[in-house]
Image 1 (cartoon, rainbow, N blue to C red):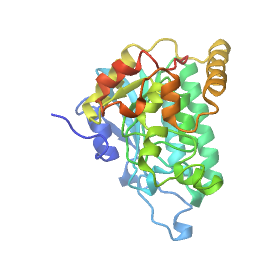
Image 2: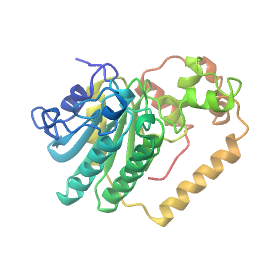
Image 3: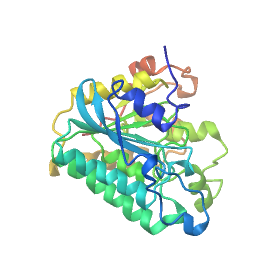
Image 4: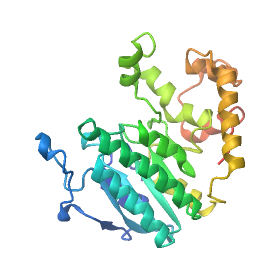
Length: 298
């Protein structure tokens, strides 16, 4: 029986993605580790600061896992929120976990804690790369209503594997941010079709920013994460790998830099009449896209 990943809370997701009964939460709400900044601003706090972290198993393998709660400040990162993620990644290295699974749903950094949040995100990035350097795969799942934006969008692309649903979104700047900075002529954040065909899972899969596309189903995310963990190859970033990734980005700009709409990119990749592509589920879409998609290096 399918269960929507999009509609689930952070705790529901993490409990269903990991093996049943295996999850042990670290710094749970009962410990009331909250942001020291929000209270000073008379802003509401959450007793877990909007992120669930802990350890469990995935298909029998010991993993560390975290899930951001999009219902609290859009999953935005503050000092404590970021520190919990960093601590989890460091614990994974110390305990030699089989992997780290990050269920990301976030608009980026909290404006309430801008400087502290920015530092926290940079520390999360470094911790992700440290985990990979230690031979631990980091798997990111993106399928929540708030997408994965801002600095955490960069964190996602630092991971070994990115798994998305069509409903998920992944980008650096959110639609409203682009519109505010450059005007509605540059990007109309109210055009939901434009937003999803620019940042949504299908487009991100087609241009190589995510490695696996699944349906909006918690069990589909679980299966994909388990498969990514099982088949994880070398995880450490190498100079050769970074140079290859940079070359892919250079070619992308050269090839698609003048495109005004994602549909232009789809057409350039050889998808005939992209506007006529039916609303395919993940599996048939992947079959269509694999003949055209941009390949990236891990």
